[in-house]
Image (cartoon, rainbow, N blue to C red; front, side, top):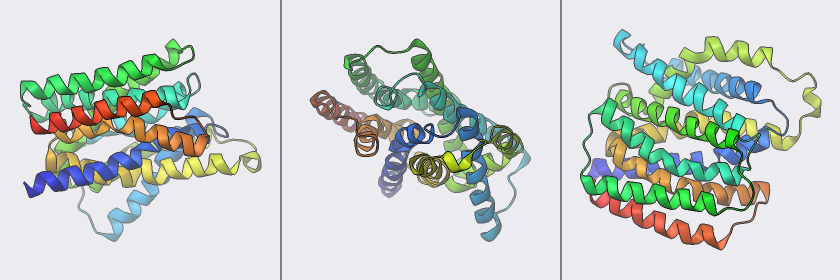
Length: 286
């Protein structure tokens, strides 16, 4: 029971941190290209991870863990940041944020495939209802959606769910922050050259909002958030704690309203209530 409570608490902290990722990415795209943003955020986070690993004298991962770490890197270090950055060039942050509500289904599916978890049938029912509520909210938003942006977000959800589930399995052996740290270092030979090759020519013209967005996604989204999130998934279960992601779109919209001055509609508040109920019921029957 204590492990479950600790897992949900740690997962909630990670989810809250992740809720600011898309608004921060949108702000960063005001001054940086998607490729540079993807490479730079991973490189900066890898530097922070390397300092922590050396300072705390963490042992090297076993050879058997390298493939799993590569999957984590492809999913959450490279795939999700790049795909969401590309999507945000075609859709608003509010439109993109609601797709995050589909992450619990993606995470739970890969948790079953990669982690051997077997939630009860009612869990899948409430998880599906929660995802349907998020999807209905997305379709109710004003404006013409972009097929390119939507497809990029769907692809991002798939690769991120795989990275979350794979990281949760590794966390049981390596620890939460160690998993994302080694995944960042594993990807650095690709991310550092990418950042250098796509560096903006006139850094003095970059706005403060873009710099702050880059700092947030580098330190919080790419490192601190994962330390809490992976620990939560490992302690409370990938499929169950993953349902907290159903709340992430609505927290993200609040952050988008505060940071980007986007309006928060009554529809969002009503849909949030439905999603909270689905999360509670999914937890009960997990």
